[in-house]
Image: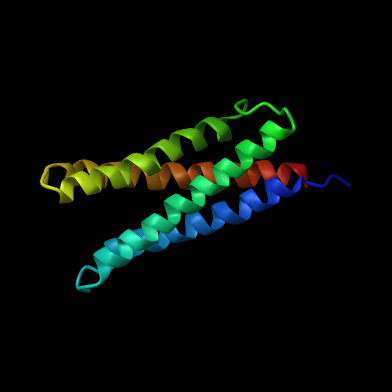
Amino acid sequence: MFQLRWFYQVHVYIIIIGVLAMLASVYIIKFKKDKPWRIKRHKMLALVSVISILLGVILMFIGKENLDLTHFYLPHHYGGALALIMLIVTPLLAYMAMKGKASLFKVHRWFGRITFVLTIFVSIFGTILLLSYI
């Protein structure tokens, strides 16, 4: 029976935490508009999401590097790299918007939507990839 290396397994768990935090962040900002705490919770959950996904990607990179495996050869890998870039840029846009460039909030919202959809698709492709090994 095929057994995944430990870093693949931990990568999956860390990414799941990040995706769930992202789902909660999107839910709060979209559906809890009347709550005074929504912005703080949105920021906190978005930060957990970005850190978790970044750690998951770093773990995978280090694991593959130690085994001399190819890093980019499937759509999941390229999509994950793009999603990671978007995950970093989106909060930076919000930060710049809060520091005086209010026009960037609209860009932040669109980047957030694209990042959310892209992350979900990459996670689905990753799950399909994982299930193909089992």
